[in-house]
Image 1 (spheres, rainbow, N blue to C red):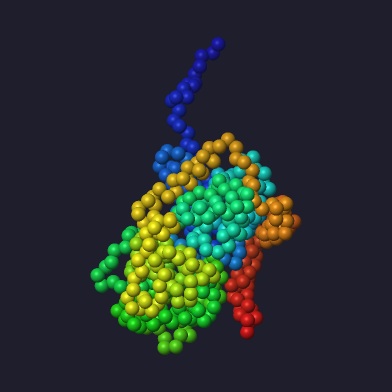
Image 2 (image 1 turned 45 degrees about the vertical axis):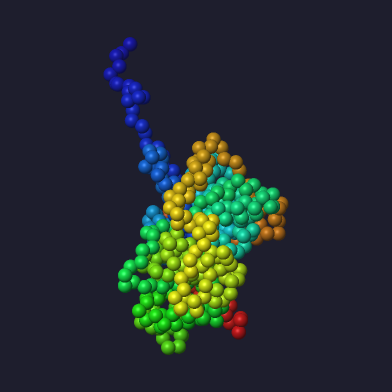
Length: 460
């Protein structure tokens, strides 16, 4: 027998092979949902690489539509741990094909309810040998369409609730219709943070956090703008900022048909020198805020988390369409008259504790339960089939329309013609992408510029 000239290594001598990365996909349909989804993905996988576990790779995908964020909006969202230049737009069908081909471990659906429902059915129809863990939730305060939005999200493995208050409400809705409520998981808003409020000598800054669709009418929005400007005139040594979400022509989670920028141009008497319109990351604006004023923006929760004095306006009433009814019991409800006179609301600590604000320092552990649930699902030998509450049998007059808007058939498969055939050749691919970009620009112009004008003309 010939002698062995090669050395056969003992398995114990072989260094541990690197573990494959944990692959996470975030699908979002607006700038705020992108922020929520990307940061949620980071919270759910925090520390994996540091603990010697699998490294994490997060891919960003934007669902093409009326609110698809622009590069400027993505940059303004702030640091989310994903290079904005690597984020790409997809249709619903393209996303499903990407999941099929890329073998993601976790998918975070940061979408409006109908989008979540469509993706759940589309993912189920893929019938993958090993499907990804599916996570979804809400980007902020849930003050409208509670049952509708929740049932459209039912079927995900994890439905995140931003507070104990929300978790209780979510479970009640699911159990009330006989649906499994085990996916509801208490966490917190993933973008809370920043240094606790510290007053600075010589600084006196009031910030009004504007909302794209609250209030909705020209008269109400003009009233709020006028009162904000009057507040600046009453207090000439105070810096008064109007924090805006988007520039005219851009869209956020909600359509803004009456931008404050345009209303400000028409305000009689012009603007005082201590009044400014500002954009940028909300956290950076809060760094220099001494009083945050809003109707019902989620920015109020960011402000409360940092113990910044916060006011919720009652000038237009406390009404469900405004969303400020959510703050009943908070101690924050007040009016411009009182703010002009120097009133500073004091939050009710019991109310704050129930809202997931975690100003008590417990925010660091807010995602522990959700992280453990995702880890357990990833370790399971097999995941159960996705089973949304809505099916062609339970909602035959509702579900097909939702799926059709995303070019999916009632069984979740793509409708004929929904996926463009692959064309060989770089030149064809470049031409196809150019045509797509042009069509995308025309579509955005239609929904963001032309449609609002037509709607306003119809109201005359």
